[in-house]
Image (cartoon, rainbow, N blue to C red; front, side, top):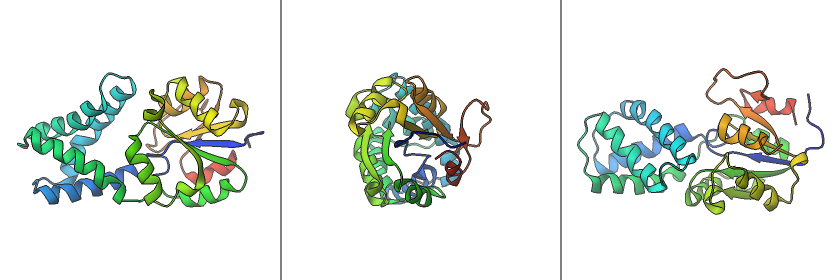
Length: 229
């Protein structure tokens, strides 16, 4: 069923529009080659991915800092793989990873098609917990920054999704009301519940193909957004 009276659409970026998993793997491949770190990429990612997801959860909850996240996820991954890497190497790898990440610009399937479809009728915006210096570069280098009227990052606001202040700030930046806005993202807690707790409508992009209650509006592919918008 189509949503009524929507004028503004707020998107998450990573795992929603920008193919974080593919681009992240390519970035690690580049920096491991540069620094001669001998590890199979698949072996590294199998250990790193759950560690990274846990660090991002802790980061959302303000239990670790940005610096803790960037160092700790690599330190724990290398320790888990029993690969001897010094703290100096980890610090440089963390810097190079952030630098290389926006060089790879794969978008999730259907992203350009849905953005072209939506921009004709709606104002589009970004709300992201990702690091400010990287998110803007991702949008520019992947060629999709032109679709978005405003970009609100957690570092700009000082709090992270699902905190209501980041949604309130994004709405203010967009000159949008809650009633005429919808949030689209892959994270149930940060994107969907965060928006709904403020009274916004929300659509879960079920990137991980998890089982969720039918009480949530959700899509498995971007093109399915046309059912609602």
